[in-house]
Length: 235
Image 1 (cartoon, helix red, strand yellow):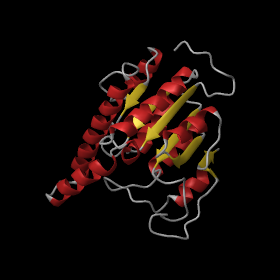
Image 2: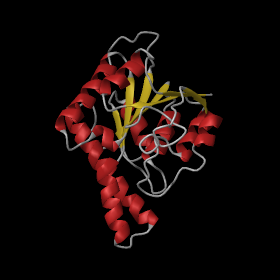
Image 3: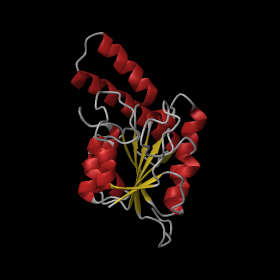
Image 4: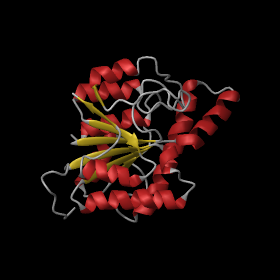
């Protein structure tokens, strides 16, 4: 990547894009995310993107669960959907990323070393793409990790069902773990960040931002200007 980078811009950033946020069935949304990634690259960032499964994955998982699949098998169903979603984004990136997403953190780091956008979906059963993102950020020593979700940050209750839910502006890693202590870990669960990811963030001392990523511009602003209306997770 040949772009000049301002000292205030993170050198290496990982973006976790929820499948429902990317919305692969809407070409305009995927194109907008590809444009956002391109702008970060042009600003001098090395970018890794981990794509989630979203609503489509949850629908497949629920069907498979009804038909008798166990949780490990359901995880594998979800992983397959995340990788398909990542392929759709790769097509929109038009050569900035390999057409086939990396399946390991080692492969993703090698992609960054080649000057590519490192693109991933899920990896192994038991690990959500939230955790994959945190692991990738730790593995490549990212300066910033952004969780682009369909809610405006981390709340003290589910904002989709509780009108009195309050968003946190800032949480330490330990505080985030306390908030997530009762989060569900079944395949297809939709918490903005899962407990395993939170533990990886704490272990690595990573700075993460959880925000509403339905507009990719918010992700660009959070990375390049440190300007967002989400939740900062800090050491």
